[in-house]
Length: 380
Image 1 (cartoon, rainbow, N blue to C red):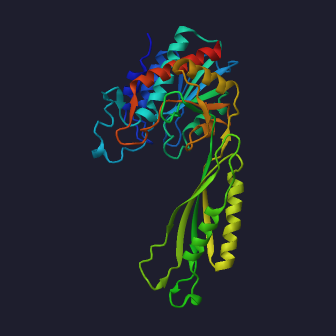
Image 2: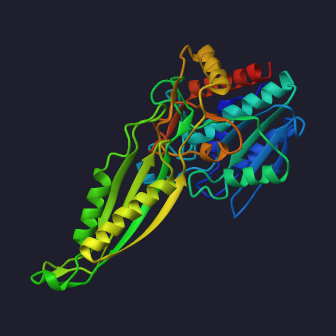
Image 3: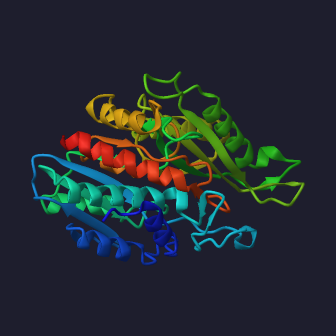
């Protein structure tokens, strides 16, 4: 019997899996996949729930993998929702609920497609579903844990499709073949407090911070590369908390975020920032302490067999040939790219993370059909 991806999406939305809570979503999927002939293993780590499901022989000559997540972001102002956030109610052709777009519909579509495919045309190879409960938070013990477990247990994917929403406005218009890197630098600039009328007796950390932020944000990092737009550094905050009008404060903090393309890596950018911080310390007589958090390096899967396979299936089901994009934030593809070639394709993501998040019921069915066609073409 064919698996209804809309019903499965609704069942998943009803699981209150606000990150890092499992909420019953992976338990539900494990039960359905096990009944469909998949060998399922819970790969929990650090209090995070993850599920690895494989149909077919371990070590098969070719294995198609899907990756996705069932954790969702918090509700925000629950009173602002006009539909129950975990009700999965359908209205005017849309299924409402937190995670309906990002990305329980994607998980439901590839699970339903995989179950139908292996039941109808058992392939010469294996199908893997790697599903995490830790994508929306720190992602330390999510897909990274699954990949670590796979390495330790001789499990592997030949290629992988991440089912994140990738289409800005119209179903089928875009797939992602890469992602920009993301890093955040946190600064603490310490000077010497003093009277504003006697600046020579103080060392002003605010002026030093302003100079450093101006230098960093004024630099043109690059003009873009073959597959990426130009890199961008944004100043996010400068904080002093000084209520006085006659006191030079002792300390100021600031934060910048850099979204960078494949012309850079986090190490090189960190080195450049430290050089600029040293110049400011010398000029202003302050100290600058910096902490860097790297969310992911930039990467690209060059156009080729995998993107061609997905593009052909999308065109067959939607009539559109998806453009190859590297826009947006980070995703778990940043981990998968170290394991095998990876491309992202999913539905329209307009309402993800919003109040009254919702997904087109029609698109869920389309997405299942696309994923099933991809499996058919890959193994055919």
